[in-house]
Length: 340
Image 1 (cartoon, one colour):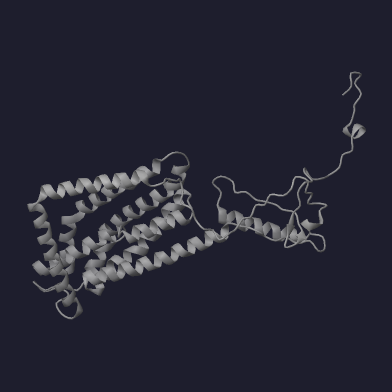
Image 2 (cartoon, one colour):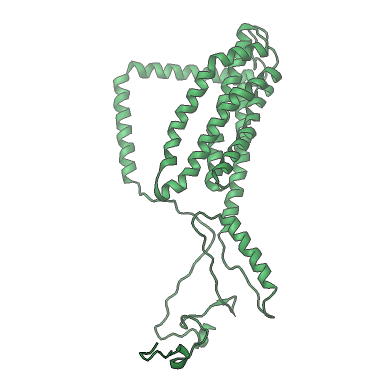
């Protein structure tokens, strides 16, 4: 705007045209001219859902592209995320199978083993519901938390305690499964709640971390705690009903694993348990010596902890290779024939 009130348009003093911000770079894909476009994920957005929406939108826009123009996805991170989730799901199934085998090895009764195993999918479904209620997604952190909960027997340990106590009462007192279950729950209800509170006290503080650390570990913490709380509820509601329904009565003094492979396993286990008890007794007789050894081990642990390098997140191989090259200052990618 001039002082006399007249307008001076930009086109009066300059040439205005559409163009690139810079002309000192060249984009090619598979040796052909291309135009690069990057899509960055917004904070808190779902990576898998965003990638799917972007690809769907590109498919819609591709119908209006000029002849000979097409789009290609040169790099995306969702392939690594998909592979990671698939690996975790595979590990989850393997953990369930291994937990079943370990429980069967020690419970030595298929019906008794089946009861804690049924608790696993029930707790998993409940945990998914909690994640949905909090607005969380199924990702590597939440899936790893579920694998950890199964691997540490957090989902089945309460059910195992109930089943073992019911079978103990049936064997010692000759009660029916229903009567033994009622008596068992009167004995261990407080213990089940106490176990859940102690374990929750370990993982709950992680949910209150601030900053980026809290954003990462909050979902992990809530998943673990939800699995533990639901495990207790299942052990106090579903497991007793299954015990009263599925378990077979035991005669007074009757035990599982009195013949065959389980008899040999119990014999070997009891023999090693006796050796362990003798070793503990020897340690107690020389307690001062072992306290000194414990202090030395504790000091060594602190020393190694201080010497180990620290980082926020571990390095991971995503299966991509990046190459950055430096060229001469006078190199022009638009005109130099070697760049073609």
